[in-house]
Image 1 (tube, rainbow, N blue to C red):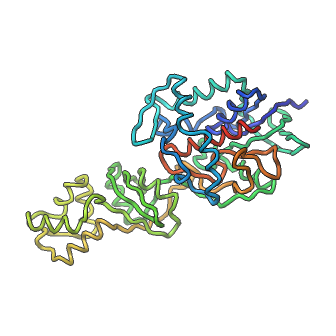
Image 2: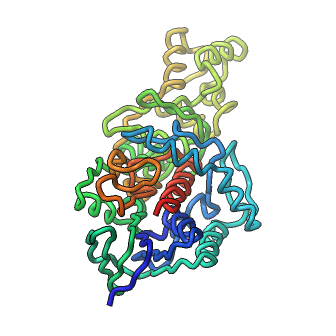
Amino acid sequence: MSQTADVAIVGAGAAGLMCALTAACRGRKVRLIDHANKPGKKILMSGGGRCNFTHLDTSPSHFLSANPHFCISALKRFTPRHFVELVERHGIEYVEKAPGQLFCRDSSKDILQMLLQECEWAGVRIDLNTAIEDVAIQGDGVRLTTSAGGLDAGALVIASGGLSIPTMGATGFGYALAQRFGLQVLATRPGLVPFTVTSQLRERCIALAGLSCEVQVSCRGQDFREPLLFTHRGMSGPALLQISNYWEPGETLVINWLPDLDATAYLQELRASNPRQTLAQALAYHLPKRLAAALPEWHAWRGPLQAYSNPALRGVGERLNRFSLVPAGTEGYRTAEVTLGGVDTRALSSRTFAVSAIPQLFFIGEVLDVTGQLGGYNFQWAWASGHAAGNAV
């Protein structure tokens, strides 16, 4: 015999948990279902284990979508301050590591425990290790066939996430379901993901693996000034993760190794004051020593500054302020923090997140074509979209 609920939610991640507790606090009978053995796995691993749970400067300008106005309503109705109030009510201590970026002081476990506690208080039933085998629209409701039996619900919320980090249980379930019910799914690709490089540059990156420095990186009219990190496969760090959301295969990234300086003018001044200095010595004032030594080696810049003419020094300066890189690719979904693209939001209500043609079916969170920049924006989208749907179901 099928069991019943007012609301069935598929996906016990950030958006699903927020939707569940919001709906249950309104007196709705909620079943939260996930195929994984534990809830909130991506919450636990986020922010280096400390969960960058929101960004105080959240606004639509920090999100990518083919329908950029869609996110406005939900973000206005549930702001970072609302989530911070919830965090503070639970006595969770947090820190602002960078302007606007809030992290748990101790552990991501605090945020997950808070959400689970709220769900428990509100009476949410969470079914883990449970697969969805079929979904059918029945009258004003839905019927789910699961590995644990049947479930009839008045509303179904899909919060199953994207394709990023499959080891955490990511699947394309939400996309397949959307297409089955006639919704368009916009092309997906890894976002907030490290870059891989060609074989020659890879050897150079391996030699510098673990080294980090602040750069400015640009592509397609977007630029970010944040740290770059060399890895054994290429380049990562916040600057590269940010620009990965905008980069397309085959395009060039431009890296400014000295974002505070006009490199040409700086080198000309040094040549006048200390002509016997080498370029490596000159760069070591502003870059980590290993990188300061590596850049001249990459370009075969040899000899003291006095050996360089004005045109030659100008060429060096331009390379330092505009280093061109065509990545071989990215590390893919294996390490991507988010999935770009997804369910086309033009088929949904921006207020309720219900499918316009199927009002008992909702999509929230990462499964949608709404992707935030690095820094807590994607969690705030999870909270805001989950809260909006939780108040509508």
